[in-house]
Image (tube, rainbow, N blue to C red; front, side, top):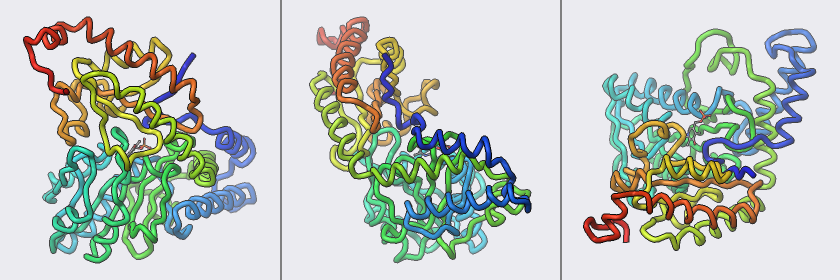
Length: 396
Ligand SMILES: *Cc1c(COP(=O)(O)O)cnc(C)c1O
């Protein structure tokens, strides 16, 4: 038995996305830049994908740029806004302390180039308010980049309010919506979003393909020089099957969004209720405003890595921190940002569900996770010291 509970890291592909890709790999292999009919058929397919994605975001097809995924879209959005700002002497950027590394490392690069990056604190529930953003905006702010929803703890941020503040102050607003696209309603007009990143493999599409929305009138520059693809903003022969698979997956996710969210969040809440009784544990993220599928806990006295390996033996695929930080010994920057002490941040577990998750799988996790936690704690000398009172518990 394998229970896949790591949907925040990546998702399985939907049957519709797979069959769409197969079709384009088999028979529509022309280069969209070629003038012959096979090429033109591919170009028409790309246009239809652009229209589908635009429909899911509430924007115009010409405002959608295909990329190699969420990381590239984040890089392109941030570097474009910084370049435009820099030209006007505006070198102040506002973001949050718990963004994805695709955002944080890009901002780090800009800092070395003389930009000032202000990372807003996210508090214990893991969010920032529009007021925090409003107070941080300066004359020389060229960009606000705040994620739509956090990939590790699942909090959903007040993006529409933040967008309204940025629009009013005339500052470009980018949001990394990689965790939100296909899962939460997005309307770039109503939410006042200037740039938005998404990635296909987070909503049952293929890996290695994503999109950047850029509102008309907002300037975007190319990361990759070469051909004139993507209206000169992203050179390279388009990943036609990937883009078609992405469009199919996003259309499918958006047309079932409400029912999926209802079903998956009921499973999520059941899982949270089932894990809460584990002593000396704490739920991470906003208890109410959270992604339908994301459950994150910290367990005192546990090493996240060992927990994952043991859960894997029980057939549960889970995650501790983000896929990018696991493998390193540093605790997750997200958990540190919400104020978890190092020791507690090391004992984190993220279980992320999707519409394919079953009730039986959730019940199995509710049975097995507490057992594994108890087993690991009983092996730990530090835990014994806490139980005997030699050391104090951090979590009540
Ligand atoms: C997965 C993820 C990314 C990176 O997307 P890729 O397509 O894997 O490059 C960026 N931001 C967030 C919030 C993510 O969850």
